[in-house]
Picture (cartoon, rainbow, N blue to C red):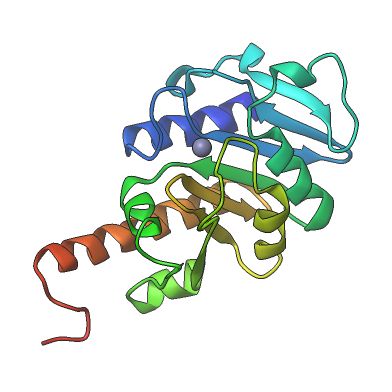
Length: 189
Ligand SMILES: [Zn+2]
């Protein structure tokens, strides 16, 4: 049941090109535990042993096997009411994260789902598992954030909710990039 939820989202992330074969990670919170994808797992074909259970605050024997972004997932669960997290590398959103400090989706639908999306980590060293505090603080105000030149962190009560934020942001960013390639702004007629 749990595995199939993870598999559905991961396969779709891969099919849409929102992660590369071994990048991106998902987790859910179950009480004081976190179920997170394994470090280096191949996302398109997740198996039972690719789901690692460890503590929100405490380590156990499985902790070293968890995703390299475990520290960020833990900090988010410790400080927010999120029950699910999706971390992806949506290419158009990542492209805009290299030029913008905030991404504003065009269209009412995009705005209502993801709101204004801050781009974090400008002028900072961005490495896997880093910026946990900054990401967590921002996710107290919004459902999804971008890390400069890296990727997105989306939260929800369900994996599907966080995933919806991720695909909605990427769709919006793709349109923004297309408009820029046509050299028109969304407000021009
Ligand atoms: Zn990443």
